Image 1 (cartoon, rainbow, N blue to C red):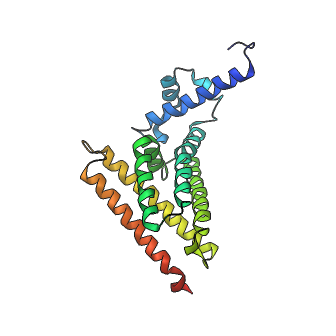
Image 2 (spheres, rainbow, N blue to C red):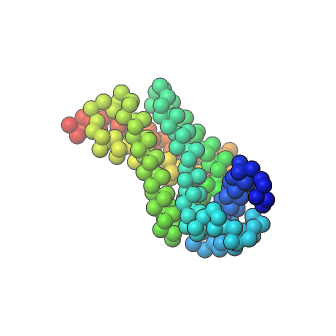
Image 3 (cartoon, one colour):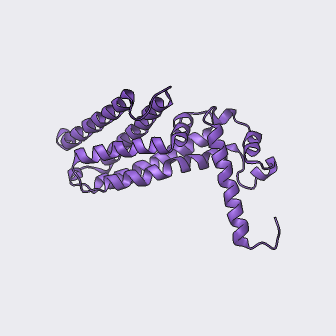
Length: 218
């Protein structure tokens, strides 16, 4: 790269290469775990020298951490928007399940990465995913706390509820992915619709329990 190129151009190229490495790794991880993937596999897929990798990441663990952040970022924002809606519980449940369905259809590789590496063999990535889910729960807790039904709830109980919601959303996404990975299965299949029905019933059960929780523990 020429030193006469403007800083902005060089920075843009660096960002493109970094994203290309992330995209290549995500593609390779559809068939293997992060702990079994080689650095040279990633750089070969991008068409850069292995030494170029270290301009962007210290190691594959750091790349995996970045993938974890990328994989959950858009889901965070979308679910927060649903929880902020001034709608009834049933409508929010339907919208939430629809959001997760759409996320799995549009980002299957990201969902697969989270499902596989959440309990995978690279400690730094496990911790990073746990940290992202923890932040997700914090965001959900803030949204739940602002809803009238949470009046009188302790911060600890709201946080517990938020973690329950986040865990259900992640497990629902994994269930949709399992169906979409099945041969001949798709969003119009009975199995896909069954996952959606189960998810709505589970969220409804949580919602009903939420309405009576304060009386049960007071």
